[in-house]
Length: 339
Image (tube, rainbow, N blue to C red; front, side, top):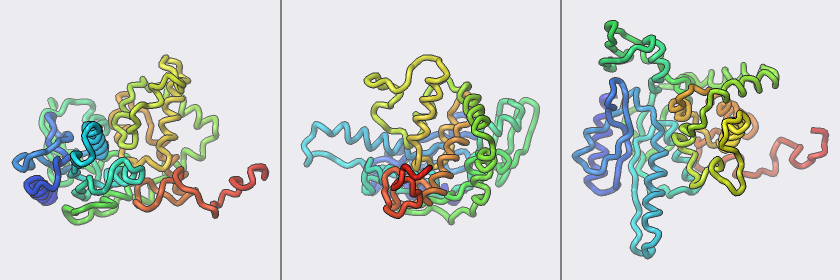
């Protein structure tokens, strides 16, 4: 990690000094122990603030989209010849790179707008899992010591293995290295455990439709409609979300359970072929709603039916953007054929 962090700072400093990028989006140490937070570096001398460790959990593709979109909006009134491109350097792990690919596939910006600083990833720490291990105690001091976390709480010193508090999406990740990059900072990380990627979904599929629906209702009953999941998701970038539209009104603003269910249903189906399992929605949810299980089910269906994994290849369109004459689902050509 230290070697990657050193190379990252050097590369960011070089890109900014040579004016190849206008900003580098990365991570810096958080104000609380054992945390990291997004940072926007615009001067070479600031590059030493950049860090790379097991606490860098944010999918930075969200900020890339916002920065480029804001720059484009700010120049709408300028003559075409006076408009300037904003080039964004971004620290990119596997899931972040797949989100960037999706943005490029959906023509949100051009490849020339990006300078991708690839970093190998071995997973990030799940704050909820860590809090559970500590019995809810406040972390007074903490440090990363190889594969362990050294933590001091009011009750004393504790050592916790990083592997025991990794986020669930990291444990079975098959894309822990970037799928695209301009420079790779460090050797590729070893594979996690992709063979078990859909194990939880396989068990969920064994439940009856009634049992699955009951689970969905139970989880959605926790939702307070704060929209944190939407705000954190790099694939949610609509100027006006369907949830705020009034003509037509797709979903009400009441506390009626059906409104909450419809909001989550529609948002999830917007993620078909677009969710990269970065865990952003789950990590920001204040109520601990199990959003990942439903999104992972959609992910599995896309792979089984279309052999497609979101953001894996830039020249492989999403299932809802593609049409194939040899589609194996014959009901498409014969809707009355008894299906």
